[in-house]
Structure formats: structure tokens, C-alpha cells
Length: 196
Ligand SMILES: Cc1cc2nc3c(=O)[nH]c(=O)nc-3n(C[C@H](O)[C@H](O)[C@H](O)COP(=O)(O)O)c2cc1C
Image 1 (tube, rainbow, N blue to C red):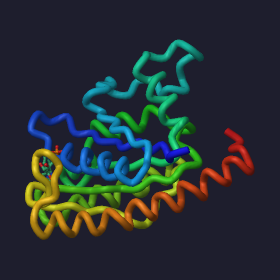
Image 2: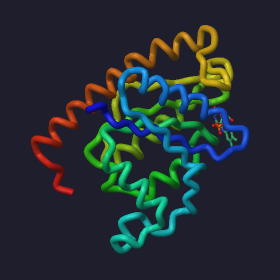
Image 3: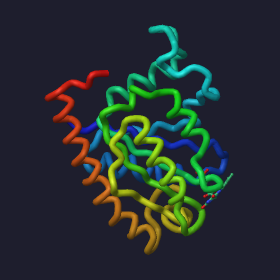
Image 4: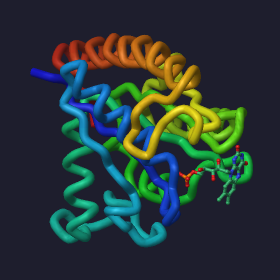
């Protein structure tokens, strides 16, 4: 069965640019045989964290949380599209991820950062690395770093110029690395079901 990969993106801005990278990644994963889906935090629209999903009595969580929890639990791997606000993470995506904990466990995650400048969101990638590890994911070492994003991808997520060609080349290793760990985690989960 194709690997089920969820691609998370969390900018709420009207003129958001990172959606270009998120759509590029979803399309690229699908082209390489993965069952990929974009999880757009803005479209889901969770309120600021009050109760985590697990703090609701079974069956009483808001519908959006129930649906997302099922998707996260059923996924084989995750990609986090990480924009950078003031050297940190985007609050919309952080808010979404903080609603869950055990639901993330035992799967690999890869980080694709971007920004308007040449730093390409590297500082937010660094912050996400620790956060995703804390949430029980295996963070793979291959990353994507796209910046300036406007010079790498068109509004339709087509690669642009030299930056786009570099992204295309980097993407191959990014997907291969994630797929290796996805398979390893799948085998281990089948061999030894996670304790929780
Ligand atoms: C509040 C805010 C803070 C920002 N801080 C940074 C930053 O620290 N480093 C950086 O490279 N770009 C920064 N930028 C520029 C963003 O990289 C750029 O706006 C990018 O497109 C944001 O992602 P989004 O369009 O998907 O929301 C910031 C933008 C905003 C709106």
C-alpha cells in the first residue's frame, strides 16, 4: 500500500507564499507514488489551544479535532512546511500541532522551510526539529530550504530558474530519506505494536 503522507502548512496570511511550497511537495509526493494530503491549518481553523484532543471525553471532541486525530493516527509519515516569523515558527501550525501528542508518535517527519529571504526559514526549521522530536516523531536529517520563495516557485508551484532547479534536485533526496524511515517505522510498528 502507498505510504500515507500528511503535509502540514500553517500560515493564516491572506497573501501567504508558503502554500506554493506546500502544494509543490504534495504534487511531488503524489508523482512519486505516495498517498499525500495537504493539511492546511488555516482551512481547519482550530481555535487557540484550550483542551488537547486527549483531554476530551471519548466522542466529545470537536469534529475538526476528531477528523484530524484519525488522519494523524492513520498516517505513515509527516512533512512540516515551516515558514519563519521573527526567527520562530508560525503560530497557526504550532497551535494545530499542540492539540495532539500521542497521535504523532512512532512515525518520521521531514521539515521543509522557506522564507522571503535567503535564510530560507532555517531558524524555524531548527525550532521545529526540537518540537517534533518532543512530540515523538523521528525527524529525518534531509531538509528542504527554499528562499527567497518567490524566486523558486511560481504561484502555481512550478519551479523557477536556478532556485527551482535546486529545489527539484534536493526534493529527490528529501523524499528518498523520508521513505526509508517510513518503511523502517512501518516494519517496526508491524513487528512490535506501539505501547500507546
Ligand atoms: C510576522 C512576520 C515575521 C517575519 N519574520 C521573518 C524572519 O524572521 N525571517 C525571515 O526570513 N522572514 C521573515 N518574514 C518574512 C516571511 O519569510 C515571508 O513573509 C513569508 O512569505 C511568510 O510565509 P507565508 O507567506 O506563508 O505566511 C516574516 C514575515 C512576517 C509576516
